[in-house]
Image (tube, rainbow, N blue to C red):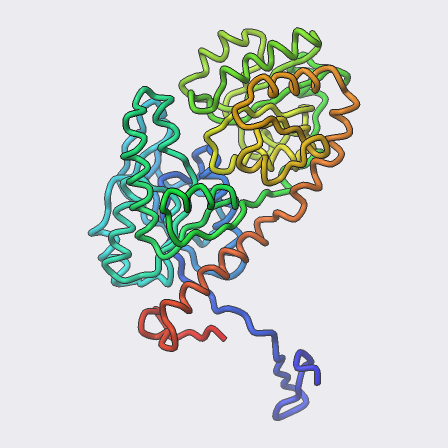
Length: 419
């Protein structure tokens, strides 16, 4: 018997469709220190996840610092309830703000409007206070491990803080019911450091927004590049932890082997002047977003990414989706997505000599670039945000099942069924 077919009930004019069972919509509280209009990987990917969760019918409440000038700009579809808290500029990144603790306000608000799940995306003061508020109210909590703050410390002259920072991160995430990590390699590394209850959920990429169709000859011309020239692209924060010294050396080696190589840099940060001094003829385009960012990706030929501090590195799948030949270390997203020599190039972790040799290979072998670019897009074809959101949804449903057992009405805002 086909239970999906319409079945007559009471009269020929009234039909009841027996539809496949689906999870009930959830009320989700998402806590983050960063969100659009800020431009960074965490903000962009979190916004895409929120958008996809709304598409699945969930009610999302966003808790974030108030941003200047009015602190209310939303790039996300409505409705999106927001709780805006006080924030302070982050040193050396004045365009970003750190949320101040708001435990009492969150306890009061969540007592009146109880969320089904609290998801904390960042580990700053706002995230810590949200964690404490949710625990006080016995709410289910999930967190994201998005940034290796302990690994950053050695790049800012505070290497002595690496162990205390790592201890804080471990305590933070181990107080949650589960923590998402983007790769199995990162999960294994965190388990070795006594992190608990880790769930591997990859990051998505919007293949409609990032794809080769946005290639723009006029944009390439503005960079001083013709169609036969090789444009190497870097996208990301311009900061010490991104290993930009190696980027500069790679460009110099590429240009020595092929004078028609151009380097285009998208992003901003405290290391901008130093990078410009080391690569005086590079084109520094500042921060880009939306279609402008997509055109910058698609109009290059290869993507040179020397960072070793990423938990994932969202720019890697974006570059692959844009049809670029990606050169990176065998680390984070690149390790997860690239088969070296087929859809990109991977240097052994920390092997700068290999990285430089591969950069020169890209600069001198246009056939290699063309072959790799043809395979790049397929590497991320199955990483849509809708698929990732469904995995996150399943994680939360499983969490609620384990927390609520046979009595969901004990915690939920309304009685729900998880059939």
